[in-house]
Length: 301
Image (cartoon, rainbow, N blue to C red):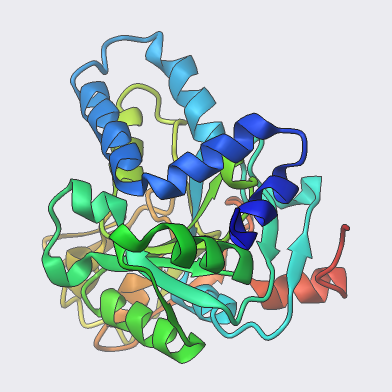
C-alpha cells in the first residue's frame, strides 16, 4: 500500500466508509463528477418536485464550495506555514453543517490536475488542467493514483500564474469541501458557470428553493466610486450572477445576487470598483483576517 493511501486511512480513522469514499472520489474523479452532473441535469427538469429540497439540502451540506476573491486566493497560494482552524466559528466562513475545516498542511506542495467538471461539460482543451491541490497529503495522492487525469506538481508561482490566466478568461476561484475527503479545504479550482457542475447545481437548485446553494459567497460586496465610473458596462458583461445591470445607461447593483468573486473589480477599466467586507454575508476566507482574529492559525489540534 502506498504511503499516500496509508495517510488517507489515518486521516479518517475508524470511518472506513469515508476512506473508501475518499479513495473512489479521486481515483474515479471524472466518472464520479459526470454522474453528479447527470443528476444535476435531471434536477433541472424536475424543479416542480418539492421532495427534492431535503435531498438537495443533504447533498449541499456534505459537498460544497466557498467562493474566493482573487486576493484571498493569492494568500492561500503564498502560504509558508501550516493552517489548522477547526471550530464551530468556521461556519461563519463556510456556512454549512458538516464540511467546514480550514486546513492547509505543508501548503507549498501544490499540484494541478484535469478538472472533472470541465471534462464532463466538454470545455476547451486548453482549460481542462485547472484543479489545484494544496498540501502534501493530497498532492501525493493525486500524483500516486490519478495519472489518467495528468496531475503534475507545480510551484506556488506557477499556481498564481495559472490562476491569473484563468481569471483573465473570466473564471472565478472556489475552495471545495466534501465530508468524504475530510471535510476540509484542499482542492481549489478555476471555475466558469458554463463548465462548473457546482455552479450549475446551485443555479438549478435555486429554482426549487432560493436558499439552496452549493457555493457560499466570498463574504464581500462591491462598492462603486461614481466619480470614476464611466458607465462603460464592463462590470455587467463580466458578472456571471446578474448582480450588475445597466438600464438606460445607469448602473444598478444587486448586493444579494453578488457573490463577491472580484472579477468586476479586476476588469473595470476605470478602477472604479472595490470590494468591502459585507457583514450581512458569510465571513471571507481571508487568512490575514483569520490571523488577526485568532492570533494563531493553529486554533485546534
